[in-house]
Length: 96
Length: 487
Ligand SMILES: [Zn+2]
Image 1 (cartoon, chains in turn yellow, cyan):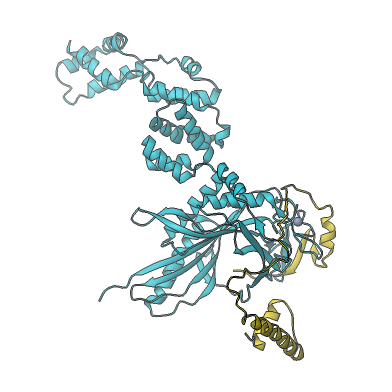
Image 2 (cartoon, rainbow over the protein chains, first blue to last red):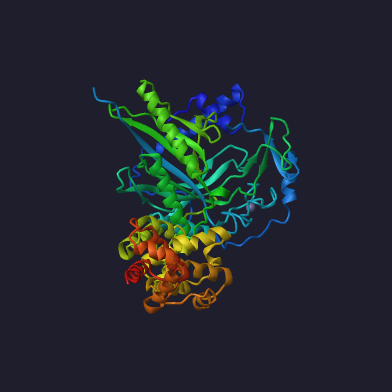
C-alpha cells in the first residue's frame, strides 16, 4: 500500500499540521516505508493468529461509580489562554 | 407502462446517555447542569500523563441495555481511539468500542404498514464517551461577535451507548416505533432514564431508496435529530427529496446532511469527515465479562414492556391500546398488577387506572409513587362497583374523595352518604310513589295517553334517579315507574 502526497497532506490537515514541501516529502517517505514494512507481514500465513493488541493478558481494571470532584478545575481553565468566565473560547464553529 | 415505486431503506444510529453518577473513565460527576466546566479533571480533559479507568457501573448499564435489545453479550470487548478533531473533545480522539463492541446483535419489534410484527435487527450496542457542549453565546447571553464559540466540558466523558440498527426500517413510522419501543425497553432495564428533554437520546439516520426499476440511490446520513418528531420529519423529508431526484433521473449523492428542525429541511453538511480512523486504546486492556456476570445481569432484567403489554392482552383480555398505556411506565404497570393481585377484575381495573388514576396524576403532576390510593384499596373500590354495590358514578365520587382526603373506601362511602347496595325494591318504590304524588299533572298526562313519545315518562325517571342520588339501576327504575303508572 502506498499513500500519495495528497493523501498524506490531507491527513496532516486533519491533524492540524501545515507541512512545507520538504516536510511533506519526508512524511510521505516515512509513512510509506512503514507501510512497506507492514506489507512484508502479508507474506506470512496468519490465518489462525488472533490480532495482537496487548503485550500481556491484562484485565481491564474497573473502578466503582463514585464521584470524586477534581479539586482545582480553575487550574485546568488556566491551562488555556482563551477563557471567558468559566468557558473555554474557541474559534466559532459554524453549524446550520 | 408501470408506475415506478420506491422503497425506503433506513438504518438508525442512536446515542443514549447511560445512568451513572460518575463519568466513563474518570470520577467527575455526570451532572451536566452544573456551572460550566466545574465537572472536569485532567483525565476527561485529555491532559498528558493521565490514565483512563473504566467505570464498573457503566459496563453493567451497557449489559442491561444490550439485554433489553435482545442482544448477546460478548465475553471480550475492546476500546479504540477514534480520531476526532473538533473542539468539543479536547483529546483529539473519542474512546469508543466501535470495532469490538460489548454486545452482539439483537432486535426490536415494530409493526409494519400492514400491522404485522416485524423485527428491526440491532447490529450491536457499544460503549463510548460523549463530547462537551458548544455554545454560541456566553452564559450571560452576550454574543461575542461571530468568531467565537464557548465550550463547556461538563458533558465530556459522560457514558453513552451507541446503538446501530441494520437497514431494516422501511418508513418514518417504523423508525419512530423502533426508537420509542427501544427507549421504553432501556428505561425498564434501568440502564438509563432516557429523558428526551435533557438530550439523553439523539438520532442519526441512514436513508437510501430502492426503485422498482432496479436503481439503488446512494446512502445519505442525516444527523442532528433530538426528538421523535424530528426523526420522523427528517426521514419523511429525506424520502421525498431522494424520490424526487430519482424520478428526475438524477443521482442521489452519498453525503452527510444536517437536519434543521426550525426550517424542516436537511441540508448538505459542510464538515468533511475523511479520516475517521481508529487504533486500539493502549491505556485500556480488553474488557472481559464472565458468564457469571452476564447471568447476574440477566436475573436483574424485568419483563419487557412490549412483552408485558402482549401478556395483558392475551391473558387478561385488556384492549391493546390500554395495555400500551399501562406498560408505558414500569411503576404504573406494577401498580396495575398489584390491583389485579388484590383481586380486582383486570379489565375493569385497567380502565380505572388508565382513566382515573392517570387523570389525577396528570392534574396533580404526580408520579405513580406519589399516588395516594393504594392498589389494594382501588381493587376494593373496583370490586364494589363491579358487584353493583355502588354505581360507577358513585365509584368515581368515592375515588375523588379518597385522593382528596387520603381516606379509605368505607370512610369515603360514609362521608358521601352513599347507601351500598343501591336503592331497589321497596325502597325504590317508596321514592317512586313520592315522586308521583308530587307531580300529579304529569301522571295525569301519561294516564290520559297524551305522552305518545314517552317524554313525560323519561322526565319522571330523571326525578327518581335524582332522588336516589343515582343509586338505582336505570333499567329497574324505568320498569318500576311504568308499573306504578299503570296501577
Ligand atoms: Zn473527569
